[in-house]
Structures are given as C-alpha cells and as structure tokens.
Image (cartoon, rainbow, N blue to C red; front, side, top):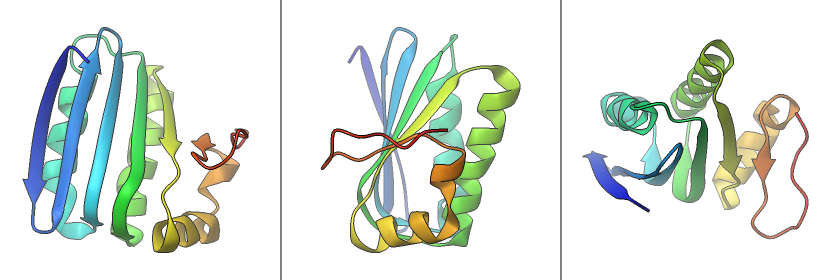
Length: 121
C-alpha cells in the first residue's frame, strides 16, 4: 500500500491503507460509541483524494454494538451518495453473529475470508 495511517481510541484502532483509488480500513478491538471520532477521521482519510473502492476489514474486531453498526451503515449511505464502492471483510465470533442478526448482508457486500463466496447486494 502506498500510505498507512492509524487512528486509536479506547480499546479500538483503525488502520487506513491507501493505494491509488483503493483504501482499506482495518478495524481492531471494540467498535462502539466511543469509536466515533477515530472511525470518522479514518474514513475521511480513506476517502481523501478520489478513492473509488473502500474495504472495511472486520477480522480483528472483538466486539461490535449498535453504534458500530450505525457507523458502517452511515459509511454505506455515503458510498451510495458519493458513488464509491464499499465492501466488508467478515469478522468472526460475536462480530459475525451481530452482522448476521442485523442483516447487513442484504444490502452490503460482505466477503467471507473463510469462503470463496461473497454476499450479494
């Protein structure tokens, strides 16, 4: 990747990796209401300069709550307005269960690193 930046909060880190028009947000720790500032700053960094594709990697998340889901949905809504592609890389354990319960796969492409299939939009 051409550039890497990290943003941290209480029990949460998001790493931004940019390469041309693509960006990866690698989330780790606990994604909850306390993460809003760090996630927002990281998303802005990821989208700076004409980014066309964003992947949010959830594999290193230990926890996500409704606030974390809200932040992901807000980023998805922004992708629809601004025309960039957004996809998620499925988390494990608790994170996987919460995404399944919330039904995000109905409208957001979620790649499963343990499978060759990807959820359809």
